[in-house]
Image (tube, rainbow, N blue to C red):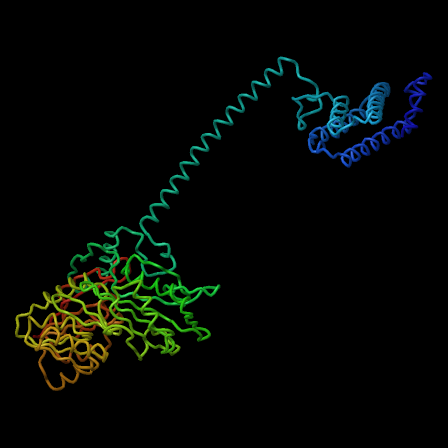
Length: 572
């Protein structure tokens, strides 16, 4: 390349002129010059040991390439004489650049920054720097603007920036306002619900509403179903509708890493949702369950796996006396053997000395039932006691006892009031459980007969009668429908029947026996208004009339509602 450039210089010195060169020579010179520049570029990058190469501006390199392209594009549009003139100028500039580069190389003073300066000089020679240049505009805009045009353009740009800034600022304000409103709504919802599991658990669906609104919804439900039969009074709400459940049940499982977890089943599945505390469960009971889970690793106790059948602990049940404060812990195991059970009891009571009894319940069957048949008391007396409506009740692991004692007192008091007792009545307490309603009513009647199918509950009921020194009550282990059918067959007289069936309501056999027995009054305590409506429809067709219904919020924040209804016989 240097040889060709020297030949070019000699031709200029001899006065041959630029017009003596043909187009082929021009292209060769430009091509070799570009190759030389590229070679120097890569040579500088390779030899750059001081990091100067990184300081070069990429914009300068891009500008030189773009400038060359523009200049070549303009050359194609020019006349032959103009082209010769521009060609001489371009070749002279490039020759001067190469000469300076050689001189600097020989002196050993070339650096990355010098090379960047040279590239900038070439760019300036090809196309003068013009800040007003816009690639998207026509070629005429590539020249410098007059002073007046520059001022006008500067003013237009300033106005545009001001408008853009104002628009963005307004958008930012409105965007922040919208974001703030969204955050406030979310914070309000979270503050109301107070439960991170509300969408998975399914137990407290209405926890994210106002309590009065919650009561209104339950009132509407009862009105819709029962109002066609009788007057429905206003629902009785709870003064403090939190942490009311005195019976807490937790399922035990393990996560993907094998760590033990405890909680409840996700609605409609057997997937365990880990829960440490719940807004409707007794706080002490929740703390005990968490402590038991924490002890499992120390005692090498594995949680039960429903699929494989491997593991030991399946459930934990905690019951607490509302007035007595006594606490029962039931460990539901797949095997009757609890490793180091004495040490386990000692460790648990060190954490919670308020525990009064601990029971091991054995459930070794593939079943959805929580409790098994076999039990072993490993600490304490094996039961707890609690007071309700002035009576003391013994509660064992399998006994039925209302989970909300505060509202239960209100419910039973309303039931006694609706019955209108005078002291001479014979009363049946159907589905009596541990004898709560019958024992409470015993102070106002001549005789009470309690009927219950669960033998453990009947045993507790008999003990409760002795504990409260009640002598005008008898308990029978039998199906309530069969028992009342037998009484009807013997033409025995019963004045009032208290019935508190499970959520599924009463079956037709029981209702048929009830109609045959012909009591003057029926006090129906229901925990499901749907099945209550069904049973009222049956009884009203059989000679009974519903007089009044009183809803009681026994289960705040859930969909369930308790209702007590008084019915009387029309043909009496």
